[in-house]
Length: 236
Image 1 (cartoon, helix red, strand yellow):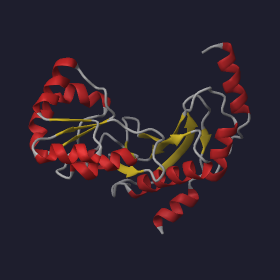
Image 2 (spheres, helix red, strand yellow; image 1 turned 30 degrees about the vertical axis):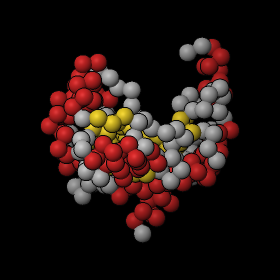
Image 3 (cartoon, one colour; image 1 turned 90 degrees about the horizontal axis):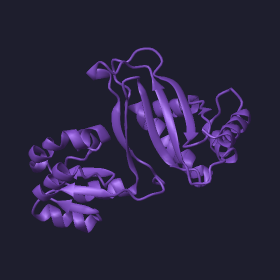
Image 4 (spheres, one colour; image 1 turned 180 degrees about the horizontal axis):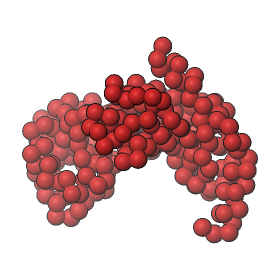
């Protein structure tokens, strides 16, 4: 990190008090202390009271952000027959069958942000685990990316559908938009994500579930979030 970047982040951190902020105060503050010259991504990081080593405590799901992510995702659909035309009509960027599977295998091709597959193609798509798996691109029925309803799946991804899942340390990272968004749009996107993660709480999880939540931008500091109002609303 350059000296100037170091000074900028220290100055930004100094402007943030150590107590948790409600979202409607945290978002404008994050925008106020911004110093990067590009349109940063804003992200929520949640520390959950679960043990991801146990399959029944994995937290995973998808949510469509009401105001999108600020960029259109490139979508690849692997399908055959009528489903190819359905995917194209819905706005998929790349569509194909075995030819796409072969291209990914031979060229390690990953110039897309999401992959949707019809169930009948998953036998072939399964061979792509080494390429798609590490990048989080493998189609999965739980996230709605293995489906015969490819038109709807493409539209949802394009509209700003994001996936959330716990990592090995029980953290969940989810983008909620760009720093240039109107504050109320970021607040709404973040609230929808928090509510979805709260509702995905495993039945076996004991004790405090949302242990800590931080809002940050790509280069900016993290702001602790007071989630009590969101938690109360989600349980109502």
